[in-house]
Length: 100
Image (cartoon, rainbow, N blue to C red; front, side):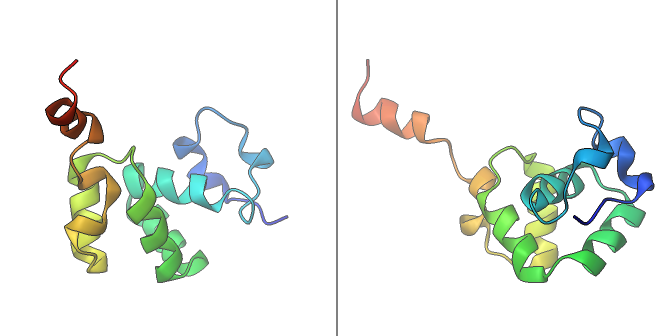
């Protein structure tokens, strides 16, 4: 079980850092760093994850802020259409089809 370094503790305020398994919880870890990470956290992320893993999480992460999502999409050269949190919510589209 690969553990997270102590300096990342501030991004995981709701769990015990020692209980996070980097392999099992990589999506959770990447989501937090993509949304809240500082320069040191991002450098650590690049050393510990493949670019394809980061892109995969970015593409499927609905909870990312538009500002963060747009930044990472530009940096990773991911088309905006492929980033889930930059798409319009489906509930708006459904109202046009079913107005009730």
